[in-house]
Image (cartoon, rainbow, N blue to C red; front, side, top):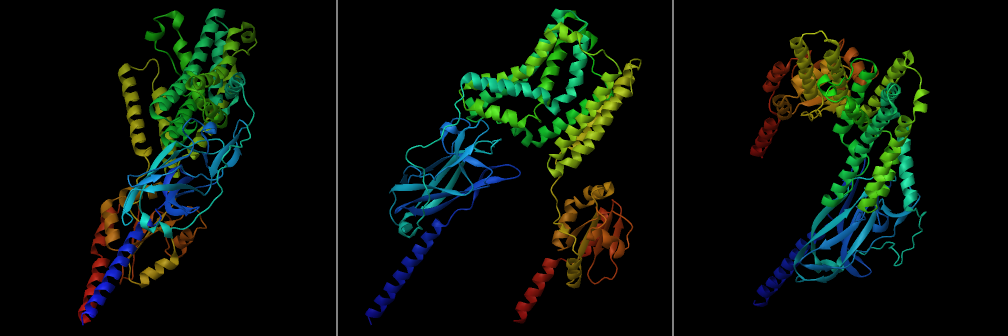
Length: 607
């Protein structure tokens, strides 16, 4: 009799020990992938697993991402110091050894150098040298990952991520064994061509020269030509100084870039990557709108004049500020078309010491400015320029159309949710510019002139407030139009809402804002378990377009149809302002959740 309780107690202890072991083993489950870096098109992530390699326990850091993006394997060939891939594990409970890195791949960068990189899916192993915790306890670990991901032509922002994990070292013997090709102990790197400092500066100078033939600079070419023709009538000294002022504006732009690069590297340990500005929708939209305004200038819709109060103070200084500003603008406008050239030049510049990198960036500006300095300092060349005439006006207007094409290209590059708003605002902005210039003239009374221009400013600001912000997220879970799904839902007694719309329909967009962006209506659709369909009729062969005419006998959009269970006739609204009527019908619908709970309770009571 005494042996029986002892046996029961022994079995209970064994079961308890096993259950504790099972509970501890859950800490070794792999972590979910964490995004390290990326853009709107692609991203790179990493996750952690416990593993063994060559009989030693440790943490496996598994990287995943597209082959087009890569990490740099060595500091010597990374875009800048400290931007190579680093993995470091820290813990009060464990002592970690040096990370074991995989065998790298070789790519050729824009300068022809062979660079060691990691790409796609690969693993880094961090061995555990010593455990400072009892064998039965778990320990927390933080794995810090830093570096920079790039393509052959552009780099994303540098990143630093910390991934926390808790591991149970008592289960280390059961961790899975992994293996992969590792980096050789001795570097066997094939060096690319070794550029001398002067040769590198020469490449930077050529990169600057090439900016003058970029299509994005064409919009300011008529202005430059007209200014040069006008300067031909002035003295040689004034012509030269005006040309140098224009060159100063170009150098000022590149000085701003160099200064920003210095600040980022010194204070934030990061680099200014050429092209990052175009990942900002606000910058792209601003550039497109600037080009639209300049196109209006080319068409003669408005002119830019210097106030007499400024120009009359010093005759010798008249026009210098405008020349500097024009040079600065010319450099800005070169940026959308010079991506590949400047990305490569910046990659080299930022891999050097700050002084050399700054000089290289400024040399690019010198390369862009030199042709204008030569042209304006040689009167013989200026005298050969064509005389002003109708050809200049036609040339100016032609470039205005080129300018609009570039603006459209930038707008198309915007995220889809912003494209429509920027297009609408561009039209209203053009109207406001026309209103500012054409509605008044020199003889207009100051009071009327101020009234017209204030109205133009208010209209532009209001339009910007309305169209430029990104559209709000959809409050309703719209389903794509599906006739079979609609009939199934109706047969099951579920309410169905169909919104017939089209991309070209302005009234449909107004209905979205007035009705379907209302939080109270969206909440009722969710509470009443209404199945909502968005029926797109943008193109005539879409299923929703055919159904609108052949099934629902409606001539056009916008049309909203609500099918109420147990009712033969549907409720229809044609137009934009029907929010309150829709809300009234939705409120009368029974709560689907309530009905389900009630039926379930009745069934349980019967049981």
